Image (cartoon, rainbow, N blue to C red; front, side, top):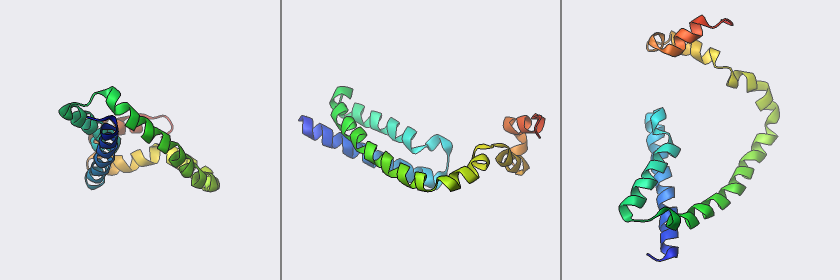
Length: 124
């Protein structure tokens, strides 16, 4: 295949794989179906099936990496603007104990190892 065609194909496969895997994740909410994980596996399998080597996929990957830089900055600006809110709720978002308490109170929770740890933690 021509290099430009391989690059375009790689970008298209990457975008489609991510969009589809994200929809699956949002429907199921299963951690194992994390969109990044599933799309990575999907991309690898498609590239192997089509016969594209990693070095042929590299230009498309590099282009997408370059485009992610401004997207990352675009995400950082709203986070910076909301920094007071982030600081105010930082402790509740980082502290796992309240979430564990809710989980251990649920029907499935008491059998888990995490609940055993939560019950035996000295700060409890």
